[in-house]
Structures are given as C-alpha cells and as structure tokens.
Length: 499
Image (cartoon, rainbow, N blue to C red; front, side, top):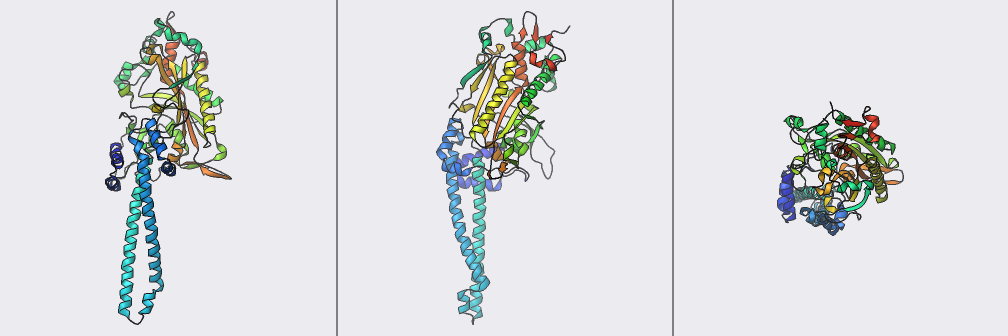
C-alpha cells in the first residue's frame, strides 16, 4: 500500500468510519503488515496510550502533528471494541468446550433416550451443527480481532515520541550558549572576508558545481585538490576525536530496507509533503523483494545494528561512531534558492550513536557526552557557533529532546542572520528500539527496551563551507587550514590559488 493510501485509512478512522477503514485494511495491507517475515516486529506500548490519551493527543498538538492528535482517542475506542470481542470470544469458547465434552462423553439427554436411536442421533446431529456454528463465530471474531490489532498498531506507529520537559513548546528555539564567543565580531563585519564559500572554493579550485550539475543534476558537487583533502581531514579528525572518547568505529551500509528507515522515524514524505528518501527501483519479480532506499543518515543503519536481538544489559551504554555517505531527497525543494554546500542531495557525515539503559539519566549522560565532543570539534576548528535547545515543532517523530549547534556563516547574513545548523543531537527514548525489536537482558533484570541517542560528530559540506568562509584571508587571498587538520592535509597548511 502506498503512503498516501495509508493516510486515507487514517482519515477514515479519525472520522469515525471504522467499519469502512477495517474493510479496506482487510483487503489491502498497510506497510507495517506488509513487512517481510525477517523484519523486526514492533512492540508499541499501547497500554500507555490507552491510559493517557489526553497526554499523547496534547503531545501531537505541541509538536504540530495536527492530523494525528485524535489518534489516541481512536485507539482507546478500538481497544474497547477489542475487549468486547475478547469477552464474547471467551464465552463462545467456554460454550464450545462444554459442547465438545458432551459430544465426547455423551450428554445427559443422550443417556435418557438410549433406547431410541433416532432421537439420540438427532440430538447428536444438532450438537454437531451447534459446534460448527460456534467455531464459525469464534473464527469470525478472531479475524475481526486481528484486523483491530492491525489497526491499533498501525495508528500507534503514526504517533510521535513523547516530548522532554526540557523542550520549549512551539516553534522558537532557546539559545543556551556560544562556542568561541570571542569571534562574535564576525556578526557585524562587512569586509570582503564575508565572501561566500562558493566564490572562495571556485577561486581556489576546490569546488566544481557546474560539472556535477552535468553529471548528476542540481544539489551535487565535486571537491577537488585541497578541497578533497579537507574533506578527508575533517572525517579523520572527527573519528579520532570520538574514538578518543571511547566510541567504537563502525562502517555502516548506505542502502537499507525502507521499513528499517520507517522504524527509525524517517518517512518517505515529511509533514510538508516533500520527498525525504531516495527509493531504489528493483527489477520486477514474482516474489518482489522488500523496498530498498538510500539512507539519509548513518543513524538508520546504526539503529538497526542490533535489530531483533537481545543486548546484554551489562554492555550498556554502547557507543559507536562512523562515517558514511548520506542522501537527502528534499534538498531540491527547500534549497532551490540556497547556493553551495549548505543543502545538497549527497554528502559525507560522521555520526555518533548509542544505546543506554532505559532511564532519562543514562540517556542524558550520553547526550551530554556527544554535545561535549561536538563542542570540542567546533572549538578547535575555530568556528563561531551557538547551541540551541530545539522547540517541539522542530522535533522529528523519534526525538523526545534535541539540541542543535548552529555555525555563523558570513555569507548567510541575509538569511537567518547568518546562522546555519551544523550538528544535531537527539534523545529518542525507546521509540526506535521498540520498532526494531532491540531488547536488553541481564541476570536479575527484566527484559527492557534500551534508549537510543544520536548525534552528528561532523557534517562535512557545511563545516567545510564554514571553514572556507571563517578562515578566508582576503588580504592574502588564501584559506588557512585549522591546526587540528594538519596531520591529514599532506603538508598543506595554507590553501592558495593554484598557478
């Protein structure tokens, strides 16, 4: 079923047309029901939604999920209907069991008419007819109950994560602090040092957008000469920094099953209707394979690393880091008037990811560790940044709390006062592990769903662009490479125009 089709079913349920929606669901499976047998089976906390429908409804409104805010109440009604069916089913099964016992051992009525075979046979035949009717009723109830379960799960999967008390409600972020505050004079500078990174990159033969446009279209680029070295230096610096903080390096795949992306909170389209994911076309087969897509972030394959497995509770927190290519389909729609490296379709990113014990304190500790790593990296790169507590309207479906770090780009003064996001860190609670069937087990500890935390160590294009603009020496017409990147620059410390 298409994503739009699924939304139609949701609207039917929210309008109260449950019978119509149920008929549709029974003939056309949703993406969740259509998962391959090897896919992780989600385990959503329906009881919490059932007991706290107002909380979940208000949470949807707080996060600007207006279409979904009636879902919790719909789930409550569907659960009640399921309970009614279950009670009815119990009564029918008890009646069927008693009848089966009578048929197996002979009823009182049969013994009373033992001398009359015609009457005894008639009683037996009526009992068999009644037994068949009871089994048909039970089968029908169980089929309806199965449809109800599928509807409840499908609706519950539409709900976003609950929101942290630290998150500002609405659309306005809260500025928490600054990185390299001594560079705030850049905010008012109006000299040639404000040249944008595209001009700088072209003049120093570091960037080539024209050739990439011919090769791949808008939103792609070539990094050349010292630009390519700078990318590799940024990757290595970010990896080495995270590894020094006890993160384990992992190289993830960039092609993933689409149902894995969905389980992580990434949908084919965002709330604005824009495409977010590149789906891969596959040859037509009699037994079609599950849909594949290009990962928009290493968070997706990282989260699935322990899908459908039981982790040892003693291994938590578990922290990994890796570099990967990332693919974002929405860049062309939102970035039609954004030139350069700020918003592109394909880029390299170093991502941090971790699983913690299912407590807020454990997740917050890892969250703060990731933020400290991001702060260290950006401080040493000499970039002027600010740290924001992001508002509820800006949270993705999986995040309960998010902090972004924005860097100041001299060339973006006319847009967002020069600020642009370069990193993001999120606590996702058990949103992803419940959908990916990742559990934590230990001696004397009940099986639980660990919490996940993710954070950008370094998004190459935006940080590279910020470095070009921040470290551009207008007088010397060169870019001075930050000292921390020297070990991976092949001896290049100053990038000059090639002769």
